[in-house]
Image 1 (cartoon, rainbow, N blue to C red):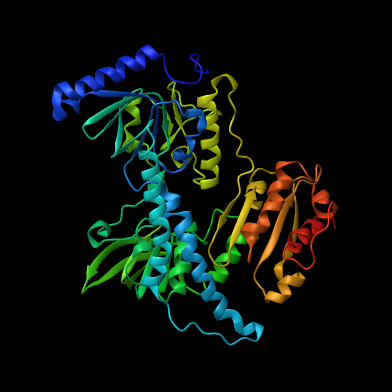
Image 2: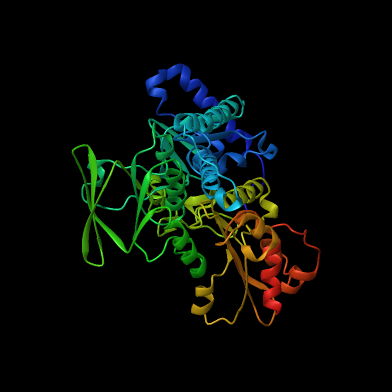
Length: 490
């Protein structure tokens, strides 16, 4: 139910009594004893990624607390989307230089100044994180707590020796790298996506455990920068959650750059003579790999249990906090958003959820349901990948009829100009309604090209309307989408 007290502060008498008590206590009890006092807030936000954006002008007269245990700004800003794509762009330039001979250009990369690349990335990002924290701390109605928050009751949190309560509490703590149990791994030492981008130098040999989007992006970066990369992949393909045809093509293309061991099960890791020794099995065949560093990229897990959410009575399933369509948990006044609730673990979904939570807390009389359909995603490796909606294997599994439209990048004028021989666009269409059920693109500009198809799905446009309802710029790369849609009509 919506909060019956409406937007704004709790009743003034409660807030005034709490603030006066804490103020008097600070003077009377001294610092040590005051640490045990409980401070009450109108709104408490745990996590400063997308959760930080909840503080809109609607909350200018609210007493707000923000809790952050790490670097202000969350994963995307500091160790995820933004820095990784800055590294990816540099790696893309290297790959383009390598492939320029097909265009009649003899290009070489004379050197990789890794420390300069790292400096370029983090000299931009680190000040943003610090600036964001300084700005929040400078607001009179906002208090920033540094430390790990844990629930001690339904609407009560402890941060170190301090305890706070909130009329509204938003859990936006994200996810952390999942580390599988491998004998000797912890003792030998390993890298994750949180740490690998700040390495002081490019390792000569890098082992990557995993075959998903993080593994594929970081393998692309470090192979381009000069590392000898080996990927140990449990599944039969890289990016196995993608449409099977796209996943197969990506695996084929990427295997030309990196050694890719499919069906690999890592048994143990240890250090010997200053190098890592990784023992693994493929189909019962025991093998050994030696490397200078190992990146563990086996997924990310929500931070639910480290918050002691069970003490607050908050329901969660398979690690993810359960919310309704308004992003309320089962505990009145407690909300959750982002990677701690959504297995998609995407920044654009977290941002949309943050906007929804901000509105619903400030306007309980006019709640809005979050709308994330259709949810697109992209993998910024090389080749680039973008997808939205159902995969072909999902439609087959549901025994749902569908048509396939397809076009290779190389079948378009701009694809000829690029000499691209690996990319394609694939659309899956309902044969009766003609609506797009899914779309999958691999190749240059995939993450940009997918947006037209997202819009078509969202607003119920048929394949024919998307193919013929307007003019496509010729000879832009977007013609690969047009031709895939026309292929369905044929």
